[in-house]
Length: 273
Image (cartoon, rainbow, N blue to C red; front, side, top):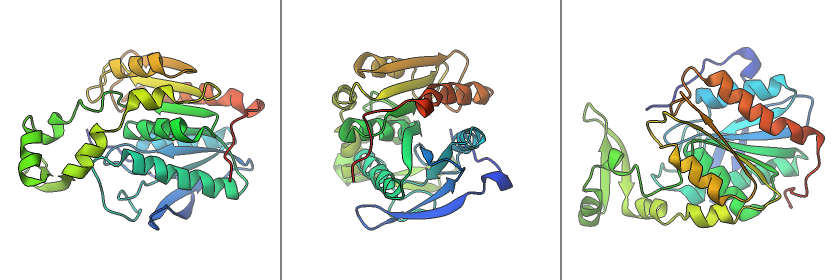
């Protein structure tokens, strides 16, 4: 299902910010600045961008609460530099690290990382490695990364990629969309969500939200996250699909409700420069 874009309201136009990742590629994002230095960082999913309607809606909700928000394009996506990669789970977590360090240097108090779909995997991988952001929200992330590949690449994808070294993915009209290299496929298959989930600090509060009628990632993946992350809360929205169509307000309310208590509390987790 393609990501949806939201029309940009003047209040949500944001300030464009460029951040270099560890490869020297420019990451492009929009900062929605309030009077508060409390900041949430929003991460998009596979083949999406910072303008995905879920991120735009969340940015609007947080700024209405007086909390600053930043949404950005991972390298190789949207306006950011770099080549699009099918896997790149670790690279996206590293991109996120560059963003966190940038805003920490600007004296922002980063209170939450929030990601939808593949962006949910990015924020969880970040939390498993760095242990310095107190709240993580995983919206519809995939636990079993070995699943869902044949839906995009075809059932015989391993034979084809071993033979040719890559697979070109085309749309229903037969038009080229993107190339999947053997290395990028191996990146996905070698990303250990079980190990990384268990490595997240118990001082980090994690929320997983998932739609029971998700047609892209089964809701059982959310249950797996809940079983393996030390300090975890699970919310299943009964009628929601992968994009929460018709359930946007419920999704936003759950995210805000989880993050809001941290505005009045202190946490031992803070980025160290």
